[in-house]
Image (cartoon, rainbow, N blue to C red):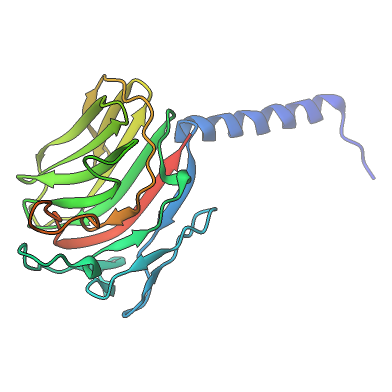
Length: 236
């Protein structure tokens, strides 16, 4: 067997470290927490998490799975009445898991959506009034925002700065750090807000497609109508 010289070994190690370093830089030190690809067949009742933690979510019977978006697949969240009663079957939900709480660290949410609706909550954990704070990605008047609010009331919101309710696919990426919240839309930076959001941690469900804790009377459910291609959560 031919032995490698020390210089070759050292060079290989250095190259490996450089590649690992560049990969870490490319992801900003983030690691995957959950990745729901929404590629299940029609009639699926479980959204499979292809990430490392297997955080599978429950799919409500009102959500249409197995939709061919050409290219790709995903879920359709159809339009429903905004009057009482609430429709929890319109949601994808996952019971509380602290891996989905930003805490005090870096945290990112990435979603792919298509809609002509000018409002609605896309994905969130907790909601206004939740002890420990909450986070969410929502649309209002066609503009998508992501908000992080701590248990002591500190909050920051980054925005798409333009309407995205144009019936086209858009990929929204929102990252929270201890000192700022920033957003990218379709790979282009749109907004950064330099506010501390403290500790964000609650005991509520993760909700996709609207609110679970609502009655459509005193608390609106803010249902999202449209298509979602995937939801991905990262932390670091």
